[in-house]
Image 1: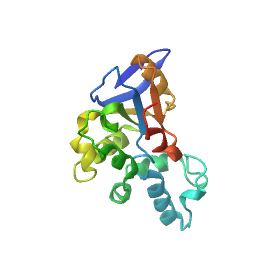
Image 2: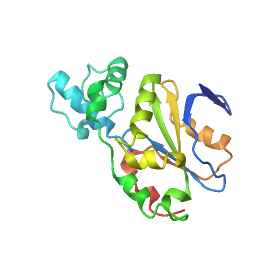
Image 3: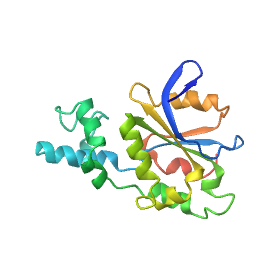
Image 4: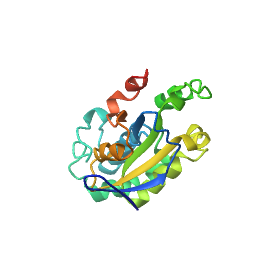
Length: 192
């Protein structure tokens, strides 16, 4: 486990360090609900388990209590590590389509930023997400351009704002955070 220090420790593991160019801004991308359709998959599983008819519109919290009060952290960990989840989850295409556009051009979106995939979970969930994303049978784009992406995994006790500390540690003041799931592509449309 790699602990990054700057005003405290960040409990995280660096699964992969992609190419980092300090002259380029960093973009942190949340794996769940920006790359993977995680919430939809969890809601489908909870609907089956509890005979519900909920949709993503019903989701008001990341603990899924708004879907069912029966849900707890252990249940979510079990779901995120289950075969049912990994056999059902799909990925979002918007980000990949934007990154694929002229990706061989040095001024393309892909080549204009340092891309850092981020996620929270336990060790098993981190490994499963990493393997899914970078497996060419699942998401060929990420497998083909693996060297362009870093993959940082936070453990449950950490808040995703810890990436701000990490960014400062990387001596990079120009960073963008795609942790807000509703604003997936809009921050990426043009360089600041």
